[in-house]
Length: 194
Image 1 (cartoon, rainbow, N blue to C red):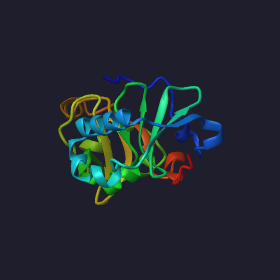
Image 2 (cartoon, helix red, strand yellow):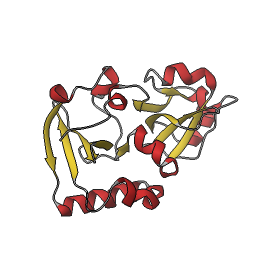
Image 3 (cartoon, helix red, strand yellow):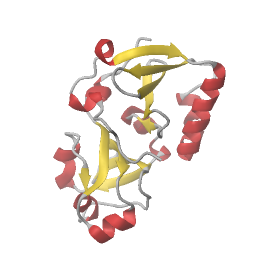
Image 4 (cartoon, rainbow, N blue to C red):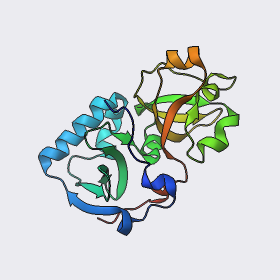
């Protein structure tokens, strides 16, 4: 299980630049293709109904390895679908979550947290427990989508740093570590020419 990230993701710092960030890009073999599909469905069972649409069996999958980290991007049809650190969990991009919203657990923040979430700041417990927030049961280290009160689409992807029960009882501190948010460099990086 992933406990923390030893670095900040390059796209959280600004625009994602392919030439500067990508060290290696390769098309995977069919056995790796099957393994990626299987791991994605194991981690996100709600993805299964959409799997053939977003990750067709016949379409090639490319792995992009980033410089100075162990981070990899999984690209299908020029679109980044997932990213992960070494053998850590797959984390879907917001574009994928917007296409397949039922694939991932949602945590909803109140309206006061919007500006912070949209800047990539970690989600604090009070933003989930106050009026307007909604906390879905989830254990520590679960990859979640951060929704906004009254909004239809996810604003960010993050990892639970406390379980839902801990968040309710403690009600302070970092609840969700932000790893990808709307309008960050990865969001702006729409088409990948591999």
